[in-house]
Length: 441
Image (tube, rainbow, N blue to C red; front, side, top):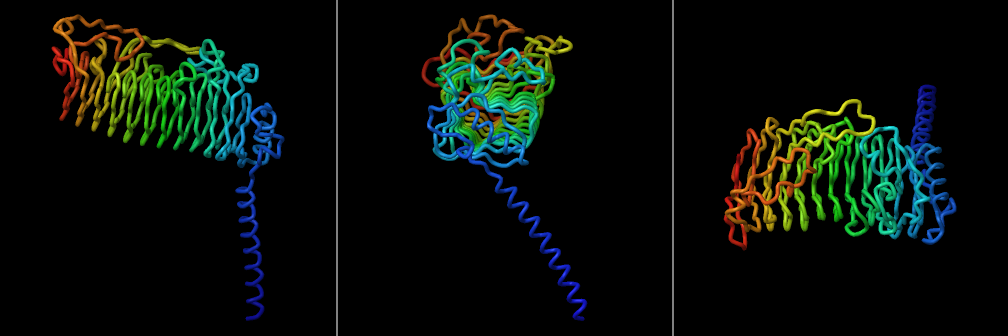
């Protein structure tokens, strides 16, 4: 018995030792945190910190991954390149400032080809073909956007991720980007949670979030005020943008609040938008577009509250058919636009024009369901507007304004098959309106 117990005790010691090693390894893994101050960063807002910050990121990755901590302070930097396994932690009181010198932003030309080759190839934060990367915390990234003047190529993105997997951006505040605030291109498994974007006056083309040719994306709890589209799904390559959920967001924009398109070579599949508010938006609250030949299908938009928007809803199947660098063959006909459900939307002060739903002759918008909508428009309009001929504009840039003043104040639909309206209430406030609430041709 004593001999048996001795053997059991020996095995228990071995097992516990093994467990202790595992726990120690996991603890060490959890403790792999590098403070950028230990790598020479000052946080004084004057010293250019690019070298110190990059060395900390590189060292963290080389050690197997972990966290790079930026404590409270002001960190002036040029381009930072993220590595696999690295989480940037921006603590409360930390602000990362983009340098105002374009020379501090080296060109990064991604291997993945898309129409964005025509835009900028510079970024403040850049990652390509890496995995398990994150930027989290309560700090701020400020791009000093007003310091960059000119066309796309001289205005860096604030953050750009290309062909990355398992990307998390959480809790941080993004301000004053010179170009798009966030660009995710051909990435998989992206989560953007609780991010605040304030970039309405910094420069032009300040899209809040651009999800481009990506797969499996969750955007939740974000608060965005942008000069350009607040949340824009794109497919600037042959890859579709698919399996995307957007929920519980607050959106404000000088363009569109939520848009699929305009760039739409690869199309869109399986997109769900819900439980959000849209305020003070100059163009459409929701714009659903395919104009470059990609198929758009299986889109659900539900539970939105809007106030003071140019138009509540815009749906367009067009034929711009723009190619991109490296494209083997230009698409020759419009992509499909079908199976769209829009429900439980309320809007007040939804402009004085209309909500167009427009395909092209021979290329209908198919199977759109509008249900449980309460939309209040500004009204206005004359008998001449009712009688005017509406141009097709097949290749024009798609916005709800592209057809001019439409003959209805609520919905204007043409080249639409299988359009269904259920419990849709349309009204106008203020000015007398000679136009009917809806018009279908």
